[in-house]
Length: 251
Image (tube, rainbow, N blue to C red; front, side, top):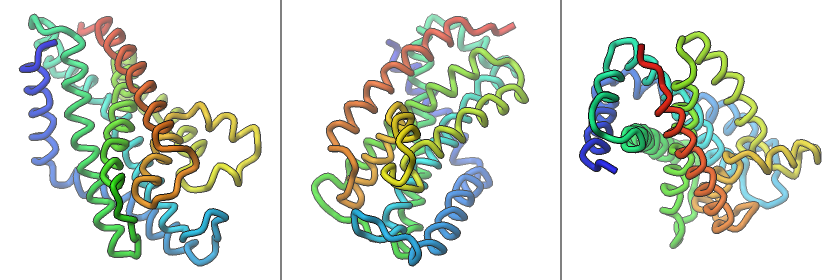
């Protein structure tokens, strides 16, 4: 494992993120539209059996949505790097493919978490009131796990798909079911039984539940279960991503 390669790839993603001001604004706008439209629009209409306002329930879900969409589309970086020759340059170095994958995951996860923190800050101005406790900051750990898991999935798609149109079709086909078949905008208990069983196999369900438990003090599952499941999914996705990346065709 080459830590220098990991650091260089992380730093490259950070510089690209900070230099693209329009990208930062664009990444924030869609989650904010959901928060304003759903949070303020349905806050007084939807009453949760667990107590609390719908806005408090929704904010962690929108954070999870933002992490999902931002992370999985990071696989386009592989397509750009393949097109402009950068991928071939880094693959001919003596660095291991696992180091390259982890460097990309680290960079993408850091920028995704920074975006999520901005969403939390903005949500404070529209009425979101997090519960400050000893586990509040574990929300960042769950954000990192969600981002890393779905960045790895994006890298898998980017490694096996060679064109942008095909990548967009596949990611859209995957991200929307992952989002709607989770507990992002509605409690699982309000969904039909067969949909709930599908949601149990969705890693986003546990990631959002962990963020919700950390920020609001209310979660469907114990935080340790959410953490364990997310770590398991993360490890599996990174291993598959490293394998898929090792088979990437750079011609």
